[in-house]
Length: 285
Image (tube, rainbow, N blue to C red; front, side):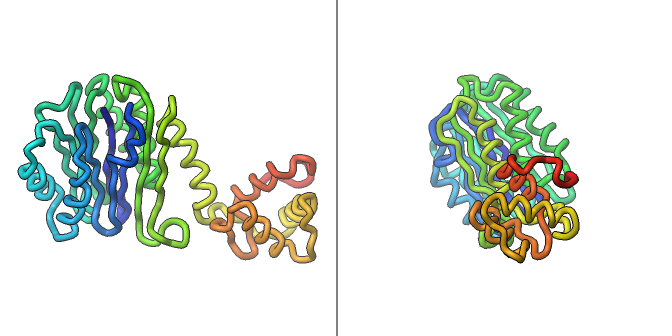
């Protein structure tokens, strides 16, 4: 009923999953900072999530943790699992009675590992394309690589029954709002194009919770443009940097604040908020 990828990239671990199943994010994925990540699917046993994470935290490898959990489960023939340790390799399991097509793939690189698995899929090309997309997205962040794999699996056919929900959960040290360690915690519980809706929501998440990137000094023509645009929004104080910081807080862009500078995506949002100022007032960033 589901296809997923569980992966590690450096110190970050996470899961992306999609299914013709309501609110798949409430059942399948789990991750723990500094420990690892797990996906439990097919006739999912939710208790696997904490059991496997506890085993990883206790020093077990992904293979050993998975083998021990499955051996103790009388319903293992109907289960499917993906596991990755925060400092180790990955493992996948598909029970003999999972509904076809069902199967998985694992891989490991110098700084990464992944387990990809799915059941009731249109065919093996789903996990094959997920693996190809994961590898092709090298150099991107963990959430973006997970989403690339998920979208590739969806494009290859995905769940044979169609689409309904999708989720992305990833953690990394110091990441996220208030540096809580959560890179992304996003769910689309019921949508006809759930994987693509999840990708759209992630773009918003990245805008509002991502840190400063591609920053430019708030001076010269850039400072003049920002001052004019803020003025059009009723913010015409003497200190443009202060007014910009206040506006960013109002529109939930404070995570992208960089003292004395402006993030390129913040400038794009400011321009979108002030179309009446006109694009010709200052050169594009």
